[in-house]
Length: 142
Image (cartoon, rainbow, N blue to C red; front, side):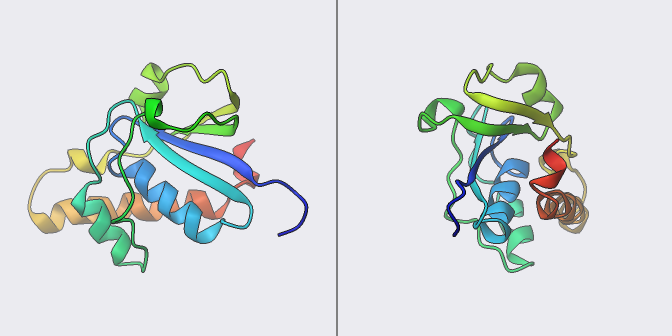
């Protein structure tokens, strides 16, 4: 890595179970040279097994990632805090140490209903949307 410091980015969601976990996994895999990534939730719901499955289908293993709240994060001056759901944007604690707040709303795949295949179809769609967003980072952060 060159002498430039990595951007510190936090993905924030309601339960830190699916969207923010997928974003953390993709960022770690695709942008590790430029971004130091974290994820957290307003609450910690555990990593959703459907998210683990959807990510595994594209060669990403997020099974070792932990669901955590913002209180469990290290004391970091984040360059960007990215809310990935409306609830987090509306209820997230004020990050006084955040350089820039960015909101990118993704549908909540954990709210999907129907058959296992219908639920997985939603997780796959959201996974692909999250990946497309991460692939454009940091240029799409404003």
